[in-house]
Image (cartoon, rainbow, N blue to C red; front, top):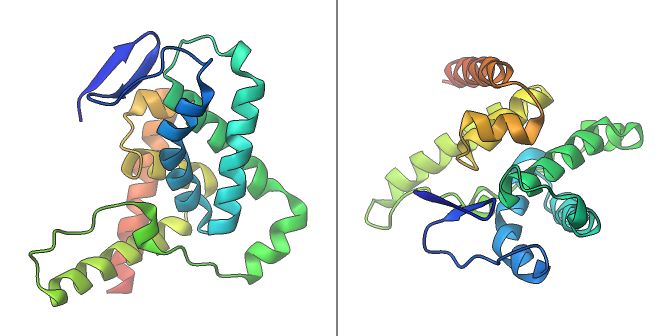
Length: 192
């Protein structure tokens, strides 16, 4: 997807773009699906993803005067979301529930196109099983690897954008992505 840089904001070509952070309702409407998709893929719990999506935009609204414009607004929102995931996962009071609840996100809710409608039901089922296996493998990754993996393959961000979102150096992002891919591939091979 071609991206256009306009007044410090990168948006997909053809989308309407708010001029600044004053029209925050438009920004929420434009970027909420992307933030929610990232949070749902990261946490695999719809209710928590919805709550953290709301928190992300509340924090962004409160800090909008501090936005310097040295990254895109989408990157800024995803950086806030990644920090919320990190904080949520480090929260000690929720570790018991996370270990004991195996909340599975509905893969169709993540917004990824699995296949076109011209394929047979059997082929669609095989593809859906493969996607679910990848999600299960990604869910078992360490937090940083999972974040990098999801930003790369769910949000289709390049390495520099991921580095901005996570606060890591580009080389560190590459290392985490490489290790995440190795781990996911190994888990998929063991599952066969």
